[in-house]
Image 1 (cartoon, helix red, strand yellow):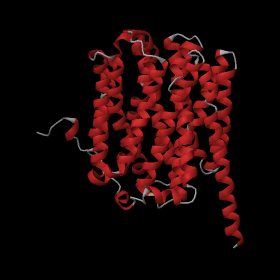
Image 2 (cartoon, one colour; image 1 turned 135 degrees about the vertical axis):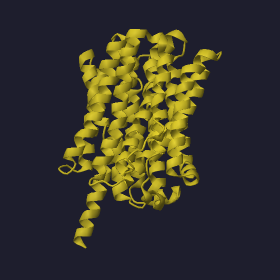
Image 3 (tube, rainbow, N blue to C red; image 1 turned 45 degrees about the vertical axis):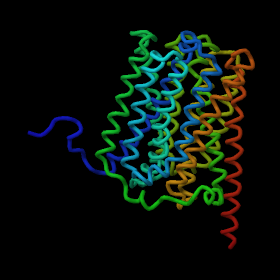
Image 4 (cartoon, rainbow, N blue to C red; image 1 turned 30 degrees about the vertical axis):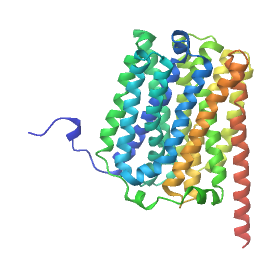
Length: 410
């Protein structure tokens, strides 16, 4: 009699299932990055963790991911893509479980959170490096559209985490946050099992890519690196603080703040990535990114400067829609213009993105602390990140168009 358990189910062995595992991988990453910030106000009130410490926790997650991004190439070379993907989900599972246990049993809740975040970051960092090249290597008619669609699942994961968490806290109270952490840990556990059963595209073994120094010698790679920093900072500077911003600065109740803050942000960010899929043949990716980068600057200004909660939330929604294309768009541009970059290119670009993700929340926390823990000032100052993104994109377009003109003349 055949075993009825999930591990023994005969899955359809094709790259469509591999692509779905990649999508679930981004949902796992969304759980790691989204759940803890929903608890910031509670952690500040119950455990006495300051805004600076909370900003440190948010930044630590991505600083640790930076280290993992740098080392991921060697791990992948030694274990292979399949085993590395499974290992990444094991770390994510262990980290989320630790988040629900360690802060409650250790003498210092802050220390317990730090340890859990470090374990989570190991999994999340590996997922970031692994998923994009795996998804890109799967056969697609439109690579940039497929990449954008894959990354949209990070947004749907955010939406899922915020919506379900809000309902859970409404019925069971914020005091049961550690129980919900155990429930969220089931997602990386299930997807780790799925990765154990799906095939890996063989082209991955052929695209290891050049070393780090040689990457920076490639034309436009430095611009892509800077784009990733700005994209990560533009997204996380507001999304990591949005729950606390909606409660403390806008005066919204916890559940309303989460629905109209992080939940709305994730919805608009995911919508932006999905929208690009059907219009990708009509508008060039780099021009779409320029348009949305300009919109992101406007969104930050609306969120930070206008003295009206409704307008502030509209600004947050504009930011969510605008940042949606920055990360996957930069990956797609780099893959298209540097086809020999390989795994090392994705690894270094993920490192740059995580560097931006650590810089953004830290910057907002530091500026807000200077102004008496007023998050409004931190949000205002963070408008610098999409502004720099816009400038770098314009430089890229100018140099690329100039190159095309020279080649046409020749």
